[in-house]
Amino acid sequence: MRVAAYAAQGPEAPVEPFEIDRRDLQPNDVLIDITWCGVCHSDIHTARNEWGRTRYPVVPGHEIVGRVGAVGANVTRHKVGDTVGVGCLVDACLTCPACTDGDEQYCEKGSVGTYGGTEPVIGGPTFGGYSKQIVVRDAFVLKVSDKLNPAEVAPLLCAGITSWSPLKHWNVKKGDKVGVIGLGGLGHMGVKFAVAMGCDVVMITTSPEKGADAKRLGAHDVLISSDREAMKAHRGSFDFLLNTVPVKHDLNPYLMLLARNATMVLVGAIEPLEEMHGGLLLAGRRRLAGSGIGGIEETQEMLDFCAEHGVTSDVEIIAMKDINTAYDRVVKGDVKYRFVIDIATL
Image (cartoon, rainbow, N blue to C red; front, side, top):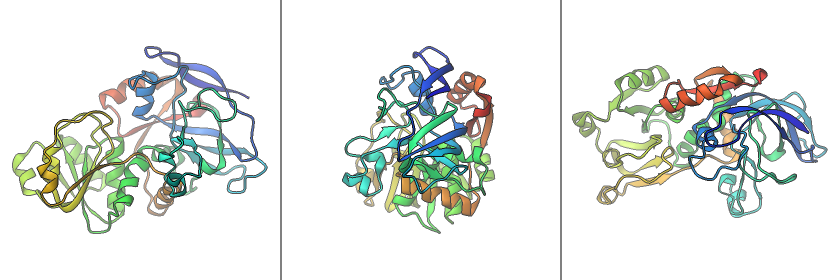
């Protein structure tokens, strides 16, 4: 079926109106009428081919919220009218060890991205949420509570789960001292989640202004990373560090903050890093790790937690026609903390 969308036709082309083909409803499919779609920095990297692997035309968007418009004959988990979400994945084998462990994002046969993957039924690339409708395998459709503002839920499907997954995997618990490094789309969710979990949350930033905003979000303290004396005072005291900085940076000062047996997890920088001193890991049996998004069960757990605790993203709503301006503002860091497209304006 033909669906209205917005696409980029090349690395220097604007994102503009386009029509795409969606597959006909299969027995295990859900048709979603999209209402909201978050804008992720990954959308920009992909639209502008900054990772060097974009297939054009590309329709970005993997922070999708909408209502079920139709379901296939075998679908029992979702019904017409339900509010649902779709994140970064729309398919995986569901049989390999990673999938059976609930880590579909690490599918050993290759998971299918919401955009830029390979459409498993009609072929060609998968197209994302900058569109009126999407058809998704039911196992990859998430339930969204009516307790939550759906526009503010959309960024949870990427920014949210990227911050939530390491907190859960490394068993962060009430009373732990947690540092969140960098306050952006990921960092502001890390602060909110850790506070709701009952942790002692410290925002670690180069910017006093961002520190003040972190306090508004619930952080208990702020550590300015350029303040050597303050950093020294916090050495060896953190149980967990969530590092959301999206660019190359020096890890050494942050590793010194970790307590014995503590972990720093990278979720932001998808590029080569500056040299790290191995002695900082050996001292105190510290760990440096990385984490991608999260599996479907884990993402549903996050959404349920958000409904229970009233946690959502801070968003700025935009019209579809303003997407290119929004891209430029994201690159400049001029958003608190996530743009969300009102798809009714498409």
